[in-house]
Length: 229
Image (cartoon, rainbow, N blue to C red; front, side, top):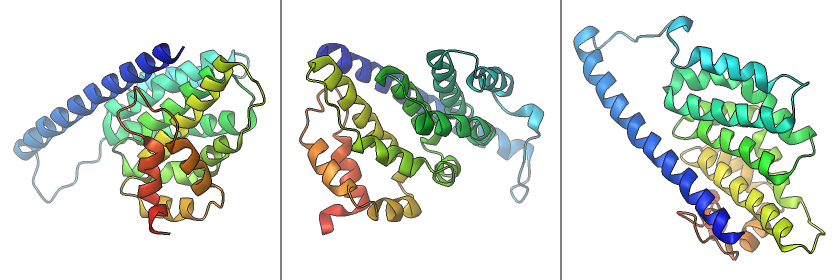
């Protein structure tokens, strides 16, 4: 089970790193083209029709918001919206924000197995990654208290597989909050006032983060500034 989880995390991380590189290369290309096509003082605001991945995001959004569908199918749609929001750049991220309301609603109000919850967390991570506008929007949608509440879940099962799955959800919670908090002072300040968070991060930092690029409980702990107290 541990090997499967480690491979799963490593694979997802490699995919995300690939898209980070692709995103930066596209940004450089766009900056070069923009220099030829527009004056420096002009700010180009693309019309709705030119939003990258717009049709795909809308199609997946219809699946995400369809209450008649299974939760896993809706979560898969959210996961793909997150990736499209990331690869499509800031305008796609802003367009996807409308559907992230539903992700917040599902995480807050629905009981679900860890696998589905992780898909939703991954969608938020992709949406917010390297996107300050999405980070601020996520804060506005109350993702911080929703994510912090994940750490309060106490699993009574003694089965190792269920314990590992529950722990993996909390690991992803740490990762998403790290993405939201990076270079985002308002998020740092709000998290600093979460009374039980320091304790939970200290506990999680001592868990086995093998297979992850970083111990994101420690990363978040230092980003918030808990080490100063």
